[in-house]
Image (cartoon, rainbow, N blue to C red; front, side, top):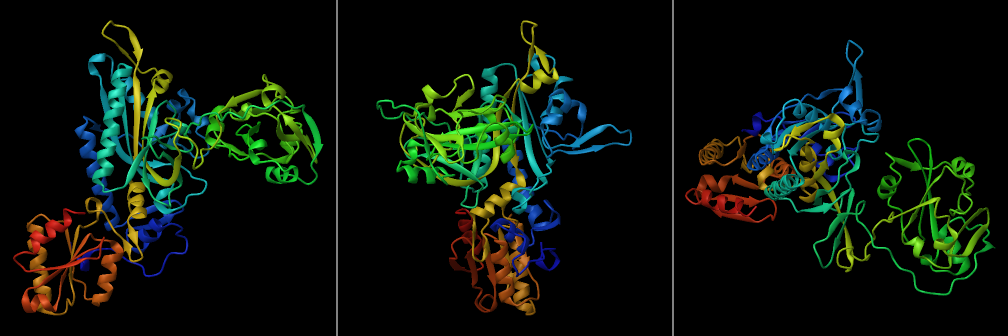
Length: 570
C-alpha cells in the first residue's frame, strides 16, 4: 500500500471529547471516526488492526475445534421471554418492532439464539462436544457511552458457546477456551492477567476475566504478593475478620450532635474507625430499599451486594425512602428499620463487639453495640459484601494483596444448564435418558482489545503497536519524494520487502520529511525504514524501532536480515 493512496486523515490537535489515551490516539492517527454517540466508523488503518486481531482469534479458536458460524443480529423477543431476560436485561437492550408489530431486539449477546439453534439440531450425546463461535457486532444502549471503543453502543465481539454432555466435558471446554485466550492475548503482544470475576447479567457459575494491565483501566485487580491468586475486586472474596475478645458492654444511646458521617462520629467519640459500623443505602430496580452495613474502615462492594439481594441494578437511595422505612440518613443501623427493607450486614460486622452505629434518630448513635446480640437475626442477611482493599489478606494464602488497574478484554463463563433448561435444549445420553446440555460462553471484545493495546503501548509521540496487530509492520519512508532517485530507491525497497513477505507501507507522499516522521510515530508502525540522500549516495538505509527509538544502518545487501531480526524482537 502507498500512503499517497491511503485514506488515513491524521489530526494534529487533540479532540476535545476524547477522554482517554486510546480514544485520542485512534482519532488522531486516523483509525476511527465518530458517527454518533458510542458508534464509530473504522477507517482503513483501524480496520487492518481489527482484521489482524480477528485472524489471530480465528486461528486459536479453530485450533481448539471451534467452528465459525454467523447468527442474526436481530433477534425475536420470544426466545428472550423464554429465559425471562426480555425484561430482566433492562434499558440497555435496543428494542424494535417489525412491520407486523412483532417485538425484536438488536442482539446484546447471543446465548438465547445459539441455544435455540442447537436445541433444534442436537439430539444425541454422539453429537457432543460442540463449540460454535462467531465474530459479529453487538448492541447495548449504554447510558453513558465513553472512552471511544472502550464503552460504546455498537461493538465487535467474538462470542463462542460450548455444549457438553457432562461436567467433565464442560471443564475440558472451559480449560480449552482459557488456554486459547491465553494464546490469543500473548500473540497480540499484550501484558495481561486472567482473574476471577463476577458473571454479571450472563449468569452461570465459574468465570475468569482476561484483563490487560493499564493504569487507565476501569477494572481494579487484586493479586496476591505470594501465591497465584488474582481477582477482580468486584468478585474477590474476603475472609471474615475476627474481632479481639473483650467483655461485652450494654447497648447505650448517646448524643452525637452534627455527626452525619462515620468519620465525624469516630472523631467525636475518639474511636478508631474499625470500632464503628457504616451504613450505605440503595434502592433496587423495583424501588425497594436496600441497606448495607460494613465496618467503618471498609467499603461496600456494590456487585456483591446486588448479587446478595438478587438485584439487577442498585442506585443510591432517596432520603424519603430511607425515612419511610424508619431510618434516619446519617444516623442509621438495622435497629428500628421497618419490615419490607432488605438489610444486608457484612460478615465481619457480625464479629464486632462493643461497636458504634446509628440510632436512627437525628443526633444520636448507639455504643456498646454487639451485632450478634443486638441485631434481629431474622431480619438481616449476612454476607461478604466488603470491597477488597490493598493490604487485605489473600483469601487463599493469607499474604497481602496489591491492587492494580486493568481493562477487561475477554471473559470465559461456565453457564451450566441455565439456558438449556430454560429453552428446552436437551439430548439423549448413552442410556437413552433426556438431559439438558451443559454450556459454556466465551467472549472477546475485538475493538476493545485494540484500544487496550494502545492504552498499554503509547508515548508522547503516539501509538506503539505490538507487531502482530500493527496496521503495517514496516513503513518505508522516502525523505523527499520529489527527488526521483530517492523515490526510485524507495519503490525498489518497497517491492523487495513485499516480495519477501513483509507487511509494508510506502510513504511516498510529497510532504515535508518532518510531517511524515511525525505521522509514522503517531500511527505507530513497529519499524520505519528511511530512504534519504545517504541511500542515494552510498546505499545506506536507516532502520528505526518505534518502541525503543533505536536506529540502525544497513546496506541494500543486509537491510532485510536486520529488519527481520528487529521485528522478531517485537
